[in-house]
Amino acid sequence: WIVTNGQYTISDIGNDWTSGISTIGDTAWTNYVIKATVDLQPFCGSNRAAALVRVQDSKNFLAFKIHDGGECFSSNAVNYAAWYVVKNSEWVEISNTRYEDYPHGEPFILTVQVEGNLITTYLNNEQILSFSDASFSAGKVGLFLESSTALISRAQPATLDDFSVVAVPAP
Picture 1 (cartoon, rainbow, N blue to C red):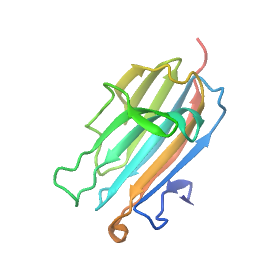
Picture 2: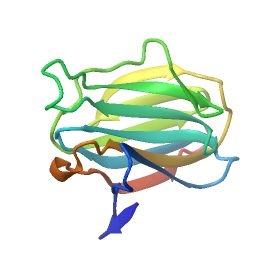
Picture 3: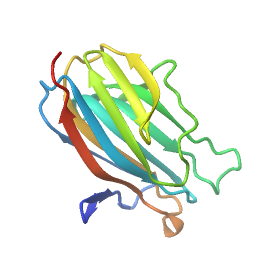
Picture 4: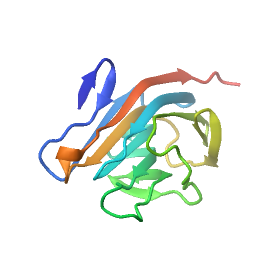
């Protein structure tokens, strides 16, 4: 990870994929809103970023993962975002949470609100998804970045900036 002026950037460590997870908070946290500016610049590779909620540890959490398919490898590159439940490092996409209309190639604001089992996702302040999940009843929050560095000389790093977390008051 590289932090410059408060902005997380993932950097190459010499293999085909570079990834990192950063968490903050308490495993007893239940209701909160997280917000971050996401910038997945298109390049000859693949960038992915995720907002993590209900984080138990680095192998168990819920994640809204944004996939930038890479523009040079295929004209059929798939760009989408989806919610995943991650248990013992196995990522399983949650049914009916795939979203394919995120702002590709430009920074956008991602907001996730967690209240009880209800998880609501916003892009640029517009609600895009809402679903219930009881996989984890509480947990920390976090950020995840992953980049394919197969063509690192042409890579543009994935970045997350302006991260914030605010507690949602109990009703």
